[in-house]
Image (cartoon, rainbow, N blue to C red; front, side, top):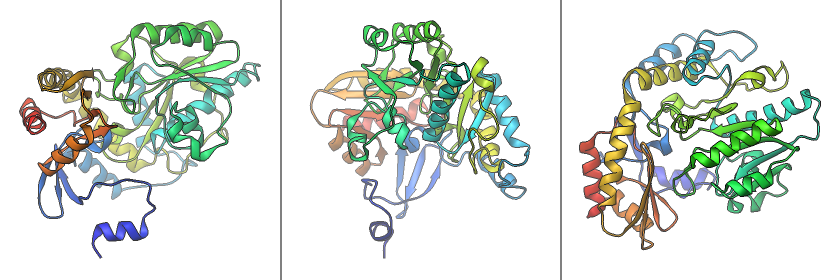
Length: 385
């Protein structure tokens, strides 16, 4: 049987995969089973921030794999606290909980804010406000937080205690917040909705409301974190600090790892037994993440994201049929006047370019942070054709 036949017969049909089998990657390129080369402007959905198989991450993984891979969190290991310090120093946060994915990081954040309210003697303070058209993951609480009914309808009843407001609607946010609010959770840039950045006014209102009601401000930076938006963290574009921040995707350079970071009163809320992850923060994942985060910071890739992202958006705006180009850094959405996005994505794949269609009108671009202007020119040339 072919790989695609094996997949059809033995893998649950949770993905609408494109008819291509990738077997190797290097930098901004992947290669299929026939040896064909593709320019990758999806990067594993913003995971491969340093491209495919970045040498320093590969070296760290190989070295750690030959030393110690897993012990559980019943014991201390060296890489986990080293990574925690690296992330805390870079973000201004105080402490970190490690897990394996963005959804798990968000689950930790939900539990953290609810435990904090109860610890403060406010057991009825349980509501979490999120945005319509948001995306926070696939676990039951995470899809409840996700303000999109299409992800929720098959899995009701949903977790209680979540409220939604239109993204960037300050008035609606103010109306939704009250004494029962234990957190407001927002993405600095919504990816799944078609790449929409928050306004500073909206995030400022969220910060002010959290301060007013004693609630926690959570920024879901699973996709925006670690250089994607032209800043190391998305919130730095707004100069508005969250109380809690979640990370995943780029964090491991292609290796699965998630993190929930907290500061001030939220940093010490969890006690032994409150929350856990068997695999979370294992030495192998943390070694990969240390190498990845260090290279992003020290290699100048955040600045590259800002510079090449601006160049890319300028190029896209000159294409015919474009209604709007929006985004921050190398998190970019191009909206077309006509419903051509899916056709363009399929045609681009045939011509050796990987892009992501969001609905019928929008292409999302999240290439590796190491992408060059020359590769952007090549991608735009293929799209223009």
